[in-house]
Amino acid sequence: MYENFIGLKEEKRDIIINSALMEFAKKGYDLASTNEMVKAAGISKGALFHYFASKKALFLFLCEYVFGVVSREFYEQIGHCGGDLLARYRRAAMLKGAVYQRYPPMFEFIKRLTVEKSSEIAAELKEQLEKMTDYGYQCLLGNLDTSLFRQDVPADKIRDLTIWALENYGNRSLKLTGDQRAEDIDMEALSFDFDQYLDVLRKCFYKQ
Amino acid sequence: MYENFIGLKEEKRDIIINSALMEFAKKGYDLASTNEMVKAAGISKGALFHYFASKKALFLFLCEYVFGVVSREFYEQIGHCGGDLLARYRRAAMLKGAVYQRYPPMFEFIKRLTVEKSSEIAAELKEQLEKMTDYGYQCLLGNLDTSLFRQDVPADKIRDLTIWALENYGNRSLKLTGDQRAEDIDMEALSFDFDQYLDVLRKCFYKQ
DNA sequence: TCATTATTGACCACTTTGGTCGGTTGTGCT
DNA sequence: AGCACAACCGACCAAAGTGGTCAATAATGA
Image (cartoon, chains in turn cyan, blue, brown, orange):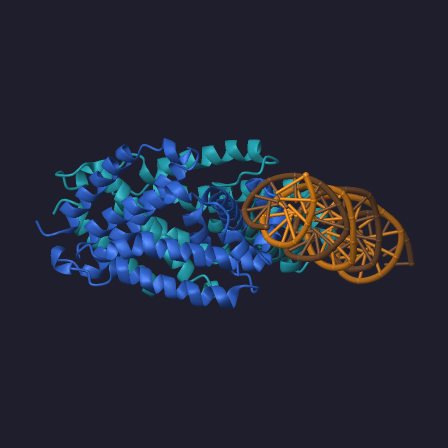
């Protein structure tokens, strides 16, 4: 498989990966155009099909690839982080920033995967995605130490509300910083702001 | 304008509106296909262009239309509801359910509008959308009685976290009920579940 | 120098696009 | 019934775009 592509130097590979991720993220599998990808990546049509046998092969490579990155650089780093939900999310936010620097469209791509409907890739995708989701759930939310939460309201509600609020915070940041070049984003200010929200959640949802 | 369309009987009009909303919501302006719309609505191509002069006119009609519905059936009803953020959101959830029954794709359509990039409609859309957003912000979040919140954390953080958590709750419900026929959804169970989350927020974020 | 690999972009057959238009059907009035 | 007029249909159009190919060129390393 993909040996022609793997041999490319990292920089060129990343450009192609990001162009393809972005196109798939924007339009979904069926409507994504390989013409747009090669235009965005600055390579020829022939090159793309020299690297990948078909559009489908390219898509499946990208899935494999992002699942690898997310597993290694993201989920596995959260695993050994104790049972404190907010501590995990803090770490997750940091890691997300690092991955975003290198592959800006990756999270959009993954988000799109969860609603992807195309029958051409449904079977292969579903299996991989389920495995990924389970693993992510396990790392982020498994073995939670709910004894840290205040005890006068149900722990699962606290957990849900925390997740939802922070997810939305993440999306908002992504949208706000979406126009800037990745290296221009002031990560320091962002994480300071984020910590303030974490403090509030800790004060309101945790034992004092 | 649209006089040929306005004259149609309500049922047929709603089918066409929903088909068009769904197609635009799924693919965005540029990629949305009028062919798919007429197929979904069960009308002929000629009919659609008999009702609307062009794809663009259809799109702008839909914008106008949903803004009207949302203003009348949604924002204005929240206005006179006191300054309690959670009470407003409770009311908003109820109203949302009612609108959803009649126009399932409407919220997806509106969500899509906020990220719509097509240059063909950019100018007209931007103006209308801004006006709408401001008005919605005013109704949902204007004149908030923050003295109800606990005073040991910043009120704006409480407000943000509440909004984010509940927005996500809404999206999740939308996704869970997405496959069911609108009239099959158990609104009672849904609103009971929702109230439990509101209770938690009230206990954690409000003065006791 | 030359053999081999990487890369190009014009080209292919095919599908889909927004929109048109001559013709048919339905409706309400006289 | 006969008529006028609007509603509606769907085959059709030129244009654009689709995933994918391939003969020709450029780059590479021995």
